[in-house]
Length: 306
Image (cartoon, rainbow, N blue to C red):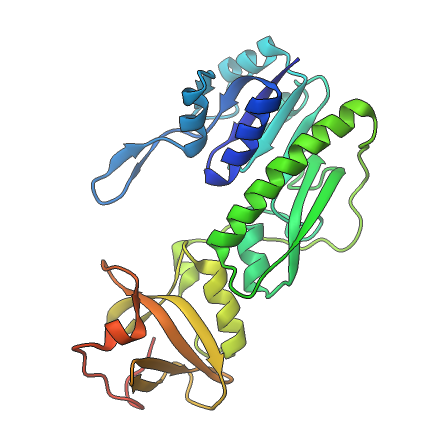
């Protein structure tokens, strides 16, 4: 029997690719193309590009609560609907349409980090373990019965970009195992148990650094914000994205530039010092602290990040 796949960003691509290799994917639903970059070029979601490469029908409804769209879904009468980072809440009419249910791949170990940004918040909060969950969708936000959970360790050098890539691949593998398990009777839904936590969506403004936080908290914050929405601050009015940092021993004033010499940039925090190893001035490439300092005269102990 056929499947319908809902997904949009790169995180969903490994799951769609795995389904194409294993299943009959009759339809891919993704969000509309968007203008991107300085040139405002109309760009297709990664999921759409993969689907078209395999000749799979793609629809991009501007509104998910649309009778014409619902009739398309209903006419296919899919065995399953699979949802991976689609970006919109499915209405009840769609959730009821597949014969065997709607399955979601979520980037956390539910019930922890329900919501839109589970990978980023796990990093920001300094978690050491995370993973993926497949679940049967209901009308709540990531509240459905769990099918399978697979965990992975968060490494010291992980950021949102690297961890998202790992979980995308793990999610694809778990999804295929889940579908096989449901059909064989080995995987059965179970209600979520334990304390639920939430991962609300992030905006660009959320990336602004609060230097009164400790150096270790800011380490996790920077990791969770790269590459989007990016941890940022201002130095002498210049926008600076902070890419890679390391807490070091010592004391300073929160946000103050404690060192800007010897190829090193060190800022004070609410507790401890933060060595800024890589950064990106506005409109320029990512560079080392040494490259940033070349040709700049910054006054240690006087200038501050704000």
